[in-house]
Image (cartoon, rainbow, N blue to C red; front, side):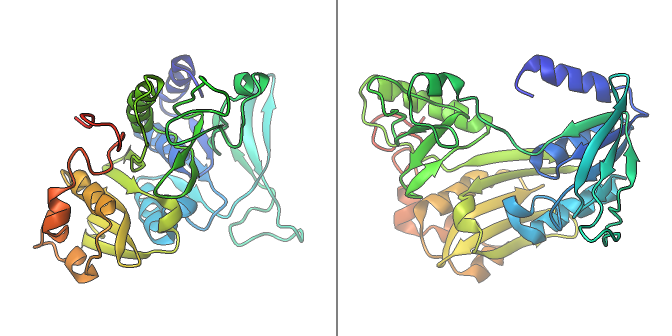
Length: 317
């Protein structure tokens, strides 16, 4: 799904309701499609490979929150399930055949070659950047078009930006490709300044959001640094109203606010400041997040504190 027309076709397939929808993949796209399909009144089955949805993105504990959310809303969520083939007759899909266990016996999830009937199948298993033009032009490509922190490719005068660009991130020390509108919005401005020979170092903190059923969420942070970090909660997980922090070496490296609003900027300030925090203070709802920054960090988290164009004077508003 790369175009508005593709999205319109998908909505037309889901909107009538009363259909059997099978979603292959339990990542962000898969869950968002499942939530929309269920909200239209369809029967929805999600097939995922991990133990819980979103496990690679946010870990098992947060993934469990989304699993409970979908099951509570009537989604048939089947994890640790593989797909053998998509079935159809006369050019129309009829179902999805699940993989049998490797030894031929039924698995714990019941994926023993059974067929899940379907009127619509959506496969949401990741995105591949369209790099054909870059390859034809001789640009360096590795999971996207490789650029430096100023969006310059290996060819002088040629820049790349957006979902297709694998950008060197100074904080992480390696290249990162981000698929979200916020990246396109922020990176486009920074790339334009770079084209004008302004000094640019793109250090924006990756950000995305999702709305599924009655859950709204914003996430900011570095997924690579969060994988082995301590997970700290503030708020009520049972009510799905909380902020989660990933803390590594005493510093917040990622944060997610779930049905709690007007805190994302504070979460980003904590990440950007790299100040060491007391996890008990993170848990304490009586403490404002900005109070954890400390005086020096609080004074410096404005436009010159590592926003989209860290080295460009006058940019950041």
